[in-house]
Length: 216
Image (cartoon, rainbow, N blue to C red; front, top):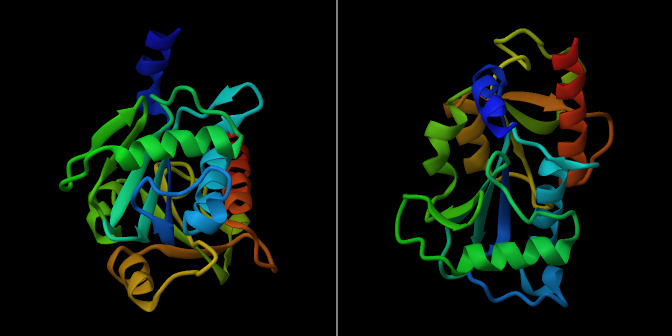
């Protein structure tokens, strides 16, 4: 079954989510008993992992998640999760936190991705170092006041092809990040509705839109 999937995956567009954790620690120092308090809101990023990959009976294979961590002495550091290779992933935060601690323990001396567990790797990358990743498809940034995602083009040049979504943490985006995402990389501003939502809820809704758009 896996070989059949690999043959057909060339025709399946990739979904990429880039989440910036401005306070997320870059060292394996947070406590499982207090992830939010000791991890620089790693609890938010862990919920984004579950939202990105966990289905009722399996994991999404056509999804990648990039967690850009900017907190602590080893910043910046990015943790990459690739659904095609992920194993041992469950929706509970404790399980996910254990995997992330292993990723943060892995050496990350430069821009080369270093695998920690299947489907999870780490590199000393900041947002600006993800250009070759985000430029592979159409780019969108979630911002209040953007166009309704339901109105976005669903042809192969829009939601029908490879897509990258930038999702903010509770601190939102800095002016410098906005310039990079919107001005340099040409990301289209999209909105999921009239009220602000949690980052992980946004990812679930985006998946739903993509599922519906690509089914039709």
